[in-house]
Length: 327
Image (cartoon, rainbow, N blue to C red; front, side):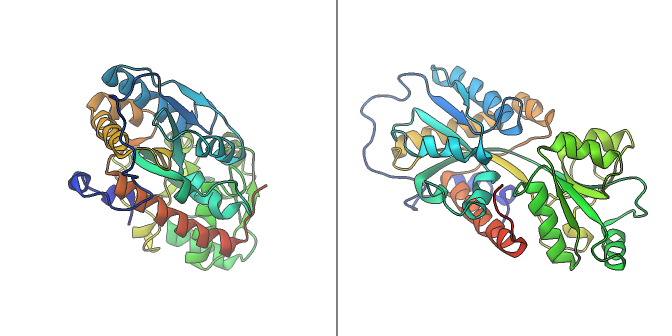
């Protein structure tokens, strides 16, 4: 199941799982009564930061209190997650959970928290596609051609990524496994440098982050073969998905969403979910996020809970099969 399959109808469903909502301790006064801090485990201008700031500004306007964003980057957002996990579960400290948290659960041998146990899902904010791109000199025009070429040159082709354990890395490892090929990994300290070296022909391909890769595809410095989403992108309707290109079930997207420390009162979770879903449905917010290659998303806390659990299990399998470990 993928995030885009969830519908608004599910928002009315009873929220039964204990991780999603703790029904104890209803707040005695209307919420919020003071500023609500939103912790982001990545630097300013990252996808998670942009999503958090766009939505938090609107939340503040609607709920009568500020929602200041606090960036605490490090260890793939695990440092920030650890801080929030220990925070008071009163709704005044929120965290932007991402696919990195789902991956980190198996990538790191030991974390001081359990993301699916120590956090309560509120609502997703958005997701970003990745694109399978190649250097223009690579003689392929589609995914089938790439797989055929890689099989004819076992162990001779390479892919770059934004670092060990990142989605671009693990998406390629999942591609390796599903296609039955072996591509060598060249990790970088971030997507911009990896993209720069791909343009320079230092390696053949990568699963580029949409916001970084798309401009290079449009200017012809890279060739896009497919997108990693379950459906085609409105901005590139002629570009197929990897799933429809022969690897059925393939999906790898960067997602972001609001979570809170486990035990946060149900009334607060529901109020925040309602407001976040309202904000992400606004045309102007969708447009703001789309300009950064982020698709606004909305669903119920229970649906977001299930999605996070599914993502955690899926990427654990990829981490295990690839042998990836945190740097």
